[in-house]
Length: 416
Image 1 (cartoon, rainbow, N blue to C red):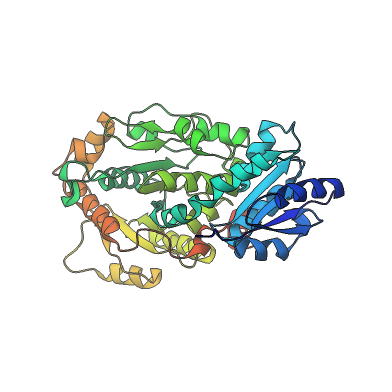
Image 2: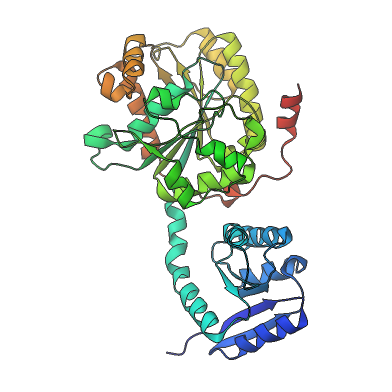
């Protein structure tokens, strides 16, 4: 059977470079050359249309231009998962510059002068994985975010024990399959998950902020702390870090890496509304807002729901009423709260200070400290709902797009 013709477009503003690269491309079998004497960043919609049609993009870069990184990232975002972009750089390109290009979405970086062998090996490497890798996009883990209406409402307790329950170990949740679950403490200043689970805090988030690191799989392996029960945790740093020190790009990359490696990612969200919180909301599959039924907490819940919904209108937001068992007959204040919040009060977690204190003092989840507690059973029931949801992956690609131009409500709240 004859192999299909591979269309390759070369972007290079420098004439001699364009000539050299194009000449090598023309020596390849079953290849059709499309030459563009311009930089990738100046190609505008041309490169997007070519990439979307299945063409491979080769572009000449110095490796030091941020415009190239922006162009590649935008190209990968709009053209879809099958886009294949290869950078051709100076032979003395620094490793840091090459990593930035790879993190932006470049499939490979080849040195000048490019050879037929280099291009042939690159083509063979990139042709086969496309069909195999694309379906894996549907197998990404789900991101469950936990937020709290006020301090001391039990948000971290819910996040820790929900993550533990989602693992489903030893027949938990009527299942024998153990799921891979990551727990992320994004409260950079007051996060307490490390103390809750009696593990040593890792300062990786602090290093990520200070060194402006875009997290990859290697960073993730160094940042994770594993509990005795098998839960993988990214803790808040031990030292105080400004909440604004992280960028949206860093948080998006971190969550993206986590969804590739774990079945569920549980995020403990800070109450502070900073810019990168938008990225968490847009990448989340569901958000649980922890509150109680008091008037001040319900009012604050309403403010947060409005803010979250403004930034991510498609995000399902469920209310969890903490410190209160589900009533047989809801009171008038419950009905009024549901009306104000415009959503049903579906989830209730009973007050169980003895079980909670036992788990805190021992540094273990409730399933270990008080497996028969009513609170433990209620959280397991919540985890069953998460697991039994039919949608196990993103169906809306807009969820994972970088947030742009939709930060008005966050800025207004921050300035108030």
